[in-house]
Image (cartoon, rainbow, N blue to C red; front, side, top):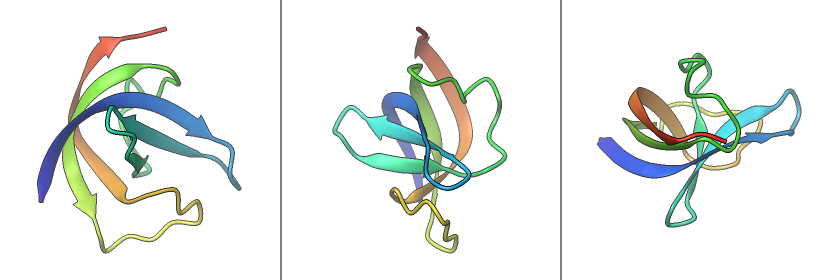
Length: 77
């Protein structure tokens, strides 16, 4: 299922580290490894379109895993 959400990028220091998208509704998604480096900037506000991957598990387990298909930067710190 494809979703589009708006939120803020965060770096979580769990284990080897993980990137998260915290939506405006306070839902946390873990960004699937291999996402565009332009997306991975802590504090950046973005609109992301992607697919929630229920077939992927991670060590961080901070929320559903989101495979990002496209994104738009709304604002950057």
